[in-house]
Image (cartoon, helix red, strand yellow):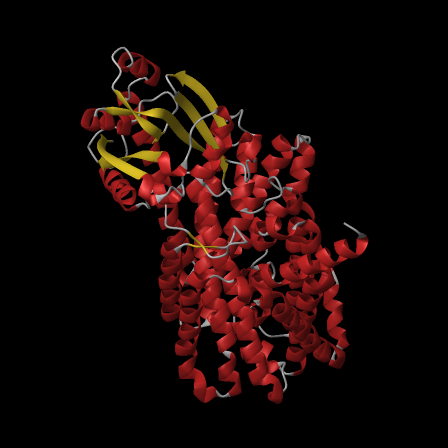
Length: 624
């Protein structure tokens, strides 16, 4: 690739990063600065404005620029980012310490569950804060804010099943326009009161904290809103790469955000009466309605990016074995990452509608926002320590130095948000807690079920040896039997012999393994070992970002002279029916919950992309 092609590719990726990665953090100026002074806990004085702006600037610098952009973007898992990628990286780093690894897995899965709580609050507060501009333009429109917000959100979720490929091309340009407008709005007011730039000095932040510790502590609960969306920097690493994400941040996003916040501060110094909604009050009257339209577009883009991330995280959690199989639809023939998960889409929609109706304003939603964000930031920092210490093998002191400061910052902001748990913070935590309970129940239930299946299973080698003493009738074609563990005789084979009394000419006993790495290449996809009599044991490996297409994977073993003609191959699956019982497993209510999840899980045939007209399912009961 020549230099002009590289430059063009970098520019394209950077534009995409601005649209997708920074949509969430880019809409924070709509509500972050406003919320600090909204409830009267932080008096609106010149000193406090300088102190808050200084804290905002240094929070953005420390949390986003230093922690995420400089440090955490280095912790890629084969080029992939995000909390699940970090979890996989950390668990691999400590695989020789099983107790520590188990604790990290639980911590990482809790963070993943909390992400879904964040996924409910982000679209709700973003779109609602944009539409609230109508109140500034015309106070009489106050009663229309909630209905208009719900209409926009409904349209957003309805369109998900059609995919976002065509709309996605507009994300970058629209978001660039949004950041340019943020920058220009801020510059106008800073030019009128340039003294506000003194807040860049950290002594204003330190003075605010030291001389007004109680007020500063309360303010921190709202100041953290200026970095909501920072996790997207890491989560979208695999889509854009480090360089475009860093370039977009330092060249446009950070300057636009900082200048806009400082512009809001400069305006409030001159017009403290505008504190109710300083963002929209910055705009001249003629620009108010266009700004509301642009802000709505920006918040829809931010919401879309988070919804897409929720689909991706769900798929990864399913493939790691923490959620039951769900129906997943690919919405693009070109982009494997563009998927639609109906159950997650409408579950998010219902929760978001509840959030908008229950809380009713962006100010009340802001109280619910910070706690989910700070929990995930804390967990990411903890995971990063173990990656640096055990994955990269740096000394303990250096690993602690690299993450200890960020941990204290995250812990401080988390503590400031804990006090808001009864003001709305309970909402995302409750959602995260429910998802966490479901994930642990599914994981433990699968473990108990597999244990029972192993205890009751017949050794495959011994079984094949016994039936070939007096072999059944062999019929043409290939039979693929899915089995949870290599060496076990699948129930589907036993039922097929019992009822049909035949055995196919070629038999593959296939175990699908999901791994804690994003991608596994085709050269490592299949392991095959002969069992004799044209029977083969096959282990198929997928990473948590791979699409589990079993027929495509099995085609890789065609050179072994195994007949895999699609029209002559049948797939035999065991449809296990879980029977909860009192005993040493989980609590009975959790076993019943697992049984319900297992019963309603999407069919394995769909999950593994098996041809529907070549699948035979045979049922069996399993007691746990």
